[in-house]
Image 1 (cartoon, each protein chain N blue to C red):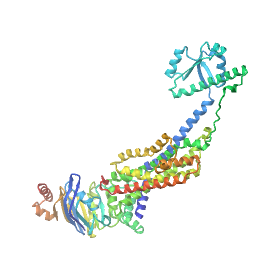
Image 2 (cartoon, rainbow over the protein chains, first blue to last red):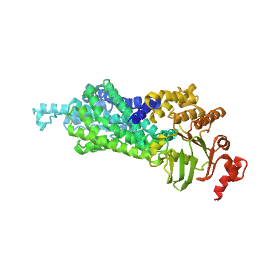
Image 3 (cartoon, rainbow over the protein chains, first blue to last red):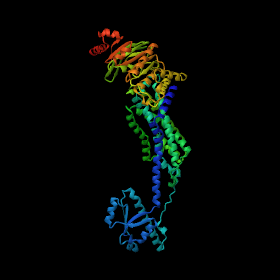
Length: 392
Length: 242
């Protein structure tokens, strides 16, 4: 035990002095996720807010044929400007992406309106162009609203109640809570936490295997009167400590980052207070052992520091796979998932963020199965560390 | 006391050792001499237990290196070829780490580290991080690391590599001092003169086999060469022919 402790404390001191390890473990890992998240959130908030308020310019051909429609559009902050000359030019401009949307009002529009026959307008847009679709949708909605208004007026003019044409109405009742809505966004954070956690121990895992070998410090170490199991355990324990620090830091940095995100404007109240931070740490903590042992395992197969780095970047992505598959298939959290590391942590974290009561059986299975898998992987690492080929 | 009996070792198709036997008694310096790739390092690696022999046995103070590797390692101090230090630790920390792993008691640890630093004249750079050390400084610290727990048996793989004249001299003095303390010193080299000047017993290895062993005079006599270098060449040719 004393030996394991000696190895552990040496690895900790050694890595605290290594700038690269420190930067990745304590800076990059913990800050990358929250920063990316803040960026995406702020961008989408900006967009959704600007949609409603800002004035949009709508090129219209033949606006003079429909002065009332033009005024109606103006009342909805849509400024009507002159469109291209002729339909062909308009089609061309939209196709080339010079204009997002063009409305064409034929000369007979007024006449058709007076006769009470459906008055045609053309709305030219490129529906494959998602950027342009936003403006097209807004123009379409405005014209539909104008249609609605005229129809109601016509019915009233004929002495018919407008409710006649409303056979069924739908009242939507949304039971989602503000924290539930926030969970849709915050759900993706679980991967960032796992990512930060793995980053924290990455260089220790490389250092204790490929790095030690490349530096020539492995062979003298193995000639000492200690067992290889003790060495391996000390090194994995040190990797675990760094991973735990990274995880803790990334959780807190996200906690502070959330304070600067105007999520309330999206109708979301993130449930990510100090209690959730602590809870999330304990939910994710068992994954540390899996992470440390997997990284050490993979790194121990590599011949050099560079090769280890390459392979470990693959390991960084691996935990997303179960999360991704489940979110694409859109299946509900179920018991079997709790046996899968990273996925079980993700699902429990989601419940935590949604502020839903935790299924204690799920939590227990997640913790024990993840720890068991971690212990198994650690054992495999120790076995591999005993083989002769270790020295390369 | 190190006893090696008929050890064989293959790496895939390469037969690195094909029956190496020799003794390295206490209070004497034994030199393992041979051209590059002869099997010197492989032999020493078997002795400090990072490799297992396919056949044969070796004991250190009577402890078998295969069946009781942990106890055997307790009895040796080893300097592997090209041994590396931890660049972020100071020389003193590097040495203290090994002392702690060798089971040196906490109370005695600082004194032991201080003694070996004085003995190897490391004092000037003892508290600097080993990142920028010269080859000579690195070798000294590696050596200090291997000797800090007072091992009875000292195994050094090409310790003089990359050392300048001054460093070489102090290493030679250190090895002689270890001998005077009654320890068993076994070191490998491919430099003839070095071995001739220092060793009581010489074991010439070529092609994974012992070509000849004995004192310098004995070897000269048996090969019929006055010059040790000629004897070396003659011995190697004997193995090549056989």
